[in-house]
Length: 183
Image (tube, rainbow, N blue to C red; front, side, top):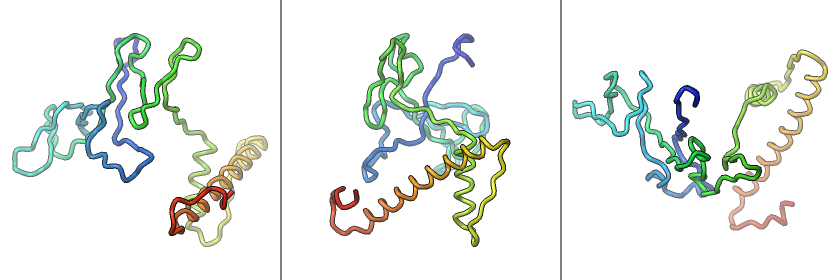
């Protein structure tokens, strides 16, 4: 529902990704609260409802569907008209949003799929397991085909370089590894 019709945007996450993967994030961050989402009817519950049969499974209090409710975290909203429904601070690193030109800019970057990136991911996954690594992609016109080929070549090179660097880091026994031997 749009804001014109009285709707409000809420931000839900299923986990928080941090730079330190060993960090214990069993507890949810202070900037979020736990909610429980029913897969059957779409109801959000503020607290879990036990099934009642002694099993450790949850049930939906609205539709009564038996099964596991999806545990999500809702991000606390900052009061004020400028911040209403917006992420004012990153819940993982604490980076603040900004207002450089009068309009508020969230600290996260929206992720949007494009045709070329979707085709690239599918092609890489298909080729990765193929015996003969050949790929033929059809495009609407030459310009689109040239753009896709260049984009895929650039990104494939970048991903290969990242994989080689990651392999070098993982095969290293002594840490930390300086960046000078790599660059």
